[in-house]
Length: 404
View 1: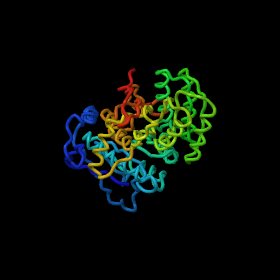
View 2 (view 1 turned 60 degrees about the horizontal axis):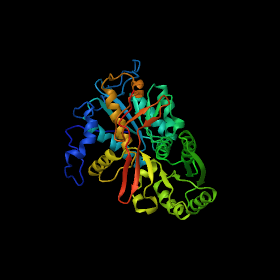
View 3 (view 1 turned 90 degrees about the vertical axis):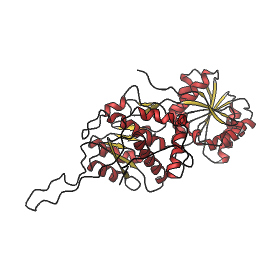
View 4 (view 1 turned 180 degrees about the vertical axis):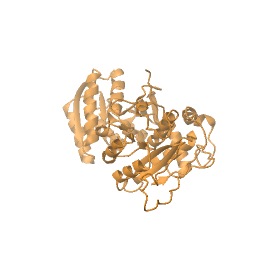
């Protein structure tokens, strides 16, 4: 467990090597922060434990619990040890950045390590009086944490995207492959493409992407002519492309995997005869910087969250911590923005107003607009990008928000 001590004035300029960035580059994050309450951020230490009562007295079961009548106690449950420690540190650092940027005085965030025992981390967070849990990261961690949080009437705002753990007090901030597939398929269909094929990896992600592909093509009035699965070996990808080319022709091909696989598969697709087919991708492509190096991927479309503010956040992160963040760091930042917004009308010491999470107008963040449905899954406003020779450019912008 680690308390973030943010006492004192902090200047947090987004700059490379510490050089102040022009005001217009900072405008995105400043606009988000402007919607929130502003004041210096500081963390008040836990109350001192009273002396033990005389043995003749009944022990006070509340002694030792932190108390804070002016601030909301928020638990951040992320892996600070183990195989996902790097991701956990990025999330924790990003939440600190958000606290500093918003200058809120209303939140007190304590970090609990889920790397070894997520259930124990949750029990400690509950025992110490936290009213909201940010995290954990993985679906398995959510399964361990959720029953403990639910029994204490504490909502869980997780960074997972596994829809099987959503609902009943658990809200998911993670990026949904189903939403990404839907966005890019409908964009392609609106531009006249009608015969769709797909390459999907074996495993949970591929199953989810493949199911969404079949459903969305049908809903958009297109035709699925073929879909092939593969594992992530070179021979398997090549065999899947060969089976695809032998079975039918298509004018749009979804490669529902990471950018590295797209870079491997696209040249094979072109040499197999699909020279003019439009290649489509998912949100997983957003973390691949080498897409533009492949001539076979020029003109490809993929859907994901907006990257403009994230690039600014990443520059700021590198300046502060000396390393690049994991892409999921924006989820940590946005979870704090959301909490700060709700905290404006939330009385310290009372239960978190979970109904506010289902605001139909949604929330704004580094990753753009999002809102939670009754299923607890974040619906996101996604953009479509096109791969070019010098990088990717937005060809269909994400909606700015959700109207009632």
